[in-house]
Length: 506
Ligand code: TYM
Image (cartoon, rainbow, N blue to C red; front, side, top):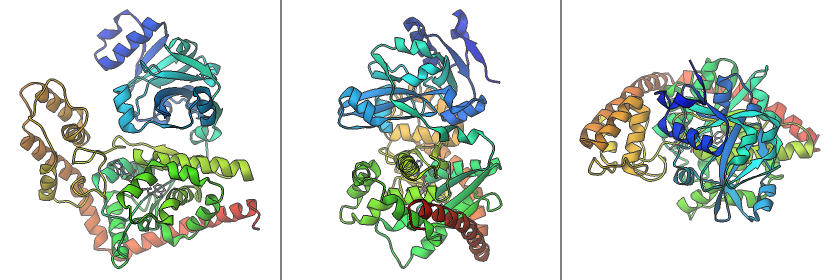
């Protein structure tokens, strides 16, 4: 029930299209950029959107907001292409270049993260030459419910844009559409109990993928990553168990996926060592995740922490996994993983795929404290999957609010975060109701928080019941983990043999 709407006179009468998209479409028309609006159900990323229309990654166009030195630029490239960052730096004369953070993205584009569109007024735009090999491409519209089919030659009419060849074709990006059984890997550290950020950003995606039935899903408690920040060795095993129970309670189904403990498959560490020898120190030092952890624990900056992204790459590559369901915060680590895969392949011959992130609707869950993301390491920022109704109410009671009404609904801070949780747990209708109240009669936060607590608890209750079942059957859990270990080991061993052969050890 998706409609392709030809750009025509009376399009603005179509009630289903986000007015922001219509406004954007009008701007494109004024610039002479031919296009069509395509409506569809909410789709979160290029792979999902193109897959929905039975298209391949070479039919999509992505807009990447980047920051070079102190300037924001937009790079527009095809979805099956990887950027040559050095070339872009050279063109703009930058000595540093990185992706914009989600916060920067929202500030500059005023669009939800994940909906970037090629024309971003005021931002210099570089069009990758490969775009023009295709007559038209499907790309972002600023809304998750619409895409836009652009006539590529017209993209050159974007003010302040120039074209240059800055990409190469990434064959792996098209791979998931074809035949064989593809592999999925994801993991979670046993640093604290799972919170609803972990659940919405990662575990829900893991469940979606296991339920597809055509993928080989391996999921893990990544205990070795858990010791890079301060931890208690005495309680560590029970901590790992607790996370395993959280996972099983949340819906990981041992009939549909393999579930294991990272340290029980020693090939992860072995591969990490090999991969570490081909990856530059300087690149790890630049990672925002590494910098953040250094700031969080200034007295605990250990070599293990530095090795974190390499071990994560090894976790994924040891199984040659192609899809990784994780939250938005893990994207820099996936970029490292792809870089390592590419480097290894170019040095020793084709071995690894370049894995992609599988995004969920809740890929970035904000903190209850009104600033930053929900995080295990920030007390007061989270709601745990094991929280009862009273605890949820108490935690939400601490979330900052305002007077409850105003002429503009806040886009960030405590109120914005509460409304985001409303949207995720009570749906668009609930969200829109509160937005209307905010702009009109005013929101009574005690009521909002009460309703939200109930909605969250409603989703958590069956999780807690399933968790209790596994908690009462510890032998079953041990068996599940042992089966997972065995299954994972045979794949990991085969990869290590191949890597050692290629690197000259066998
Ligand atoms: P960890 O343990 O910090 O978090 C587990 C998962 O939860 C997601 N997540 C969030 N998603 C949305 N909103 C939030 N506020 C939020 N907070 C956490 C994370 O993105 C993650 O998916 N490095 C990984 C663990 C790891 C891993 C791997 C993951 C190690 N090796 C291999 C995948 C594949 C991490 O720190 O997760």
